[in-house]
Image 1 (cartoon, rainbow, N blue to C red):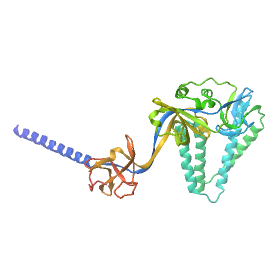
Image 2 (image 1 turned 90 degrees about the vertical axis):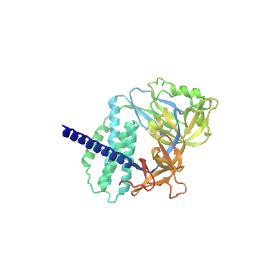
Image 3 (image 1 turned 90 degrees about the horizontal axis):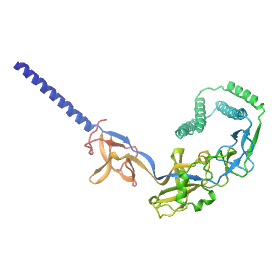
Image 4 (image 1 turned 180 degrees about the vertical axis):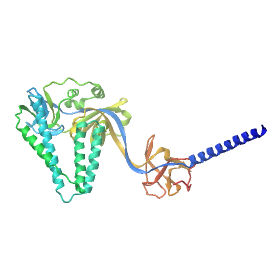
Amino acid sequence: MKSSTKKLIAIILSLSLFGSYLIYQAVLASKEKIETQYALNETVYKTIDTEAFILRDESFVEKSATGTTVSFVKDGERVARNDTVSMVFDSEKGAETYMRINEIQTDIDRYEKLEMQANLDVVNVKTLDARINTGLEDFLKAVDTGKFAVAAQKADAFRDSVTAKQIAVGGTLDVSKELSALRDELSELQATSLTYSEVKSAEAGYYIGGADGYEDTLHYDDLDKLTADDVTKAIQSKPSAVSENVAGRIVPSFNWYMLCVVDTADTVNLTADKELFVNFPYAGIEKLPVKLYKVGDHSGDRTMVILSCDLMNDSLADLRIEQMEIVTRQYTGLKVPNSAIRTVDGVKGVYVVSGTILEFKKIHVVFSDENYTIVDNPDQASDFIRLYDKVVTKGVELYDYKLVRG
């Protein structure tokens, strides 16, 4: 009985010692384990985040006929006085036929370009690679912002670039059957009699199809009379009903305006005519160059700010009430997470993995928020962090020349 008890005690002690050893090794391993990331260049922006009302000099383009309306020009496209901006078909089938004719012509143009590509002896593959990368980025951006019609166009461009690359590196392409079928369909549709009336522009300007109901919320001629309350009410307003006779709008003036109300403290460094950038994150528009037109009265906690722009395209033509970021400053440098920054002997820096040892390197902070810090090396000193340094973001008991596992 005593012998078995002794054996049991011995087993328990052995298991306890073994467990303690495992815990000890785990603690050692946890102390030695570190996480790293490379120091890479990045540009970040200090912004004033707000909501903006877009004010344009807009007049309605009205149609006299009833039926199915098809835009003849793209949104944001410049038109002259008496140019045809849309067509009104007496039947939906007629409008569909017209649109199908345009689609077929686009497809024929695409296939003819690819066919010509296949017959070229020398092609710049690097240019095609750049076009492929840009095409994919444009497609993903259009999808992210919900612009699915644009995404479809970008998808076609991306597909054609990939096909051109395949041809360039030795692939073959025979589109003769597709071209023949499309040309036959085009000839058949073009022989169809289409009844429609044209809608012409009464003045020159940018054309925008349809209407959103905010055209009369604020008046362009009242721009210099507007107050912060006027802008706030416009942003919070609901759209008005739009007449069925409205085919679109003409914007005759080059300048259009972004009206917003921000914290007065954010306007301290804003002065008239200052050139800035704005982002419309939900519309996929970044770094749009604008000019500060006016800063309102600073008497209250909130101040009106008006920005102007003279650029126009289909994306800009679609804006009305939007989340907007006013970029007041930008910072470029190496981006490191705040978890990597340590203070050694009163000096801020980071530990980097150099070969198999740790090395402490100083940092010069140019911008910081709650998650990360942008740093640079203004004098290119050797004891400061540099591009592609392997920065330790997580670890314990760090010190210079400490050996680390590979």
